[in-house]
Image (spheres, helix red, strand yellow):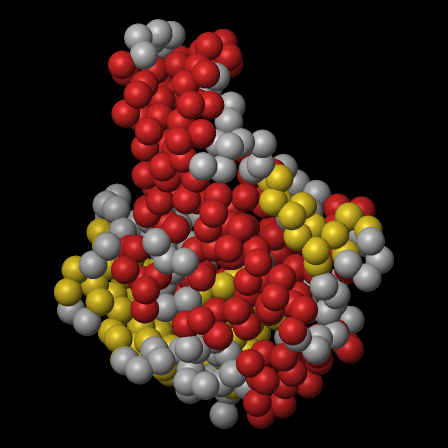
Length: 365
């Protein structure tokens, strides 16, 4: 199987990095250094190779190095299954993010067609115990990683829903104002639901086919809505008076929730221990990566921030074995190189330090 990997990453005025250049090969990349040195900032920059707002979900303006706030830029050489792409992503001071692919301006959604990026960050450790919104976001990232058009569907649905909600809050009762919006919401909403189900089926199949040291999660999508576009459109119309009272739309894919169960124990993921919840998450990320590799022709870029947290040495070693067996370029962070000992020369190492508010990146000799 071919690989998807970055051979060069350059950052200018991005977060804590005034200037950083990292040249690597296709092997996993182990980033280590003290807390606050700028390790997560590096993988956040890489996460921008995927449509959306990146792993921190912040605005382009917030990514600029302070106090200068001059704007920022990241460039990368991305080796795909059959093509090498030069990617440029930048934001001028206070402006929206812009993208060029091979020297030509491109919308963010195009990135989903040439690259696949998955991440696991500490904030996701609360996936099973936080509100449904976080689980929907997780599921949509999984879906987007397999079905790039899911991003455009989601944007179209959310735009129509915002406009409908504005009418509801203004207590507009004239049906003609709602008809076109509800039709668009129904068409995109039904497809969003179908995409999510397709992604879950691929995820579960990838889990079941794997021999892994990580537990399997049984997944279920909970969504109380008609799943056909025509029926959903009628439901939105019929529910309008109730929505007027609430001031918002109360049915649709934006109300869905993802339920997970530790399959071997039959225990809901929300009731598992912290270590078990982390292991279930790792299992899902690995399954997602395997499903992408089978469909896309190459495993995705993996961004694993503080991945060693809540994993014992045995599971840590098993994770590294699975990453290298998959052939993925994983960018991983930890506070010290000893947390990557079981990787040995299967990985390349980058030390990230901080001096007087300035991040420094060095590849040890």
